[in-house]
View 1 (cartoon, one colour):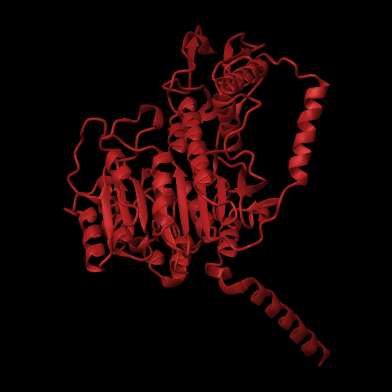
View 2: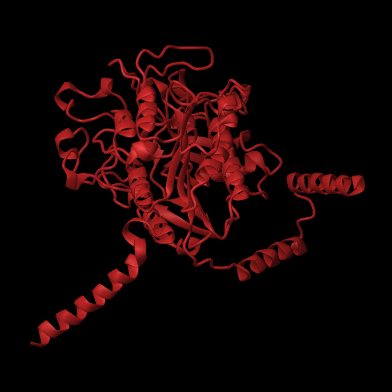
Length: 520
């Protein structure tokens, strides 16, 4: 047995060594790669039965450049992230109703509800402009989505995120708001106080109060008077409640009044020990966003990883024989990009990949549709021409114009730390990045244009899928298509009870009727 294990280790080390040094990649090597890929394609199986469960992973800000760089960062250029060998891949257009380059709440609304809306609005249609409280209160402007559809079908629902549970992406699962920043009452202007903040909608309204599993950060939006503590600082930039609320207590009281079994958990140890037979679980692990994985307190009293939360959510939701819908957000990929720290973004992408892998291992591929995508891209650039034996975070080469080195990864836009130019002898000069440790988590890649922070990108993003009906992702799609594939696969919402055939049969009858009318 030891011989087998030793040989396996030696084979792995040899493959890594060959990959790094570009050895043995002759024509026969590439022919074998091609044969293997063709055999895999020829043996693809369409799973056309309804999907009992759906898990949708959203890498916030995880554009194609991010996944490519993360793959090289964690595996090598010849390796794969966990989801990159899913059998079905398509492209998603991310623009929203009023902007070519979107934000996370508008793209999340498209992903979860199948309707495009305006920048920084959530759970409402395009008739609602930013900050228009009155318009957002109109019932016809409010959009239902995955959580409501699943609950009406008797399925369990849940979401986990590394951001605040009231943040832009998760808010689109349960809230209806004209401004994604209205996470608690202190951000809502006096003239708009008739609008309920996002945190209260999560705890008090449907479908939020019926979501079985909620995990992430955001204690400062749910409770008033939250203070800094070691390893968990209050986010002074974000919403901070001042009205005396304790929505965690209110959440518990709601479940108690409804005779539901429930648990609230605050750290890794409590999450690990939670009874999975509980109907409802609320895990709030940070005042603001959760810590990035590399900096996370990994002790029992620290914060769980995205993988930990995903695994426990699956175990809890799997208790329902009718199945479940689970949304998992790797939200700090975007957070890292906004601050211009590429290594942090790559590391968080790898953490999302790990969470996807645990979901694959914990589910039956014939009854669970797993989808991995992004809400939008970022202005990260992967540029030429680094050698294959270099880290993706290293220097690419020297510029042939100013003879100053530049890194393989750059940003199109960036904040002051990324805008590394100075004036020397009346000449603008770019800082030499080789004087810094470009592989440091805190290193800021250089940017071309100075802005307050790195901005989102407007390029399409990829979607990866496996399981029942995953073959429906097959070309370039609108972002809204994702919600309808889930609806069709799980038989919830617009496509419940074979609604698709009903639609097409009625279109046929309508065409016949129009023909008769024209004939008359």
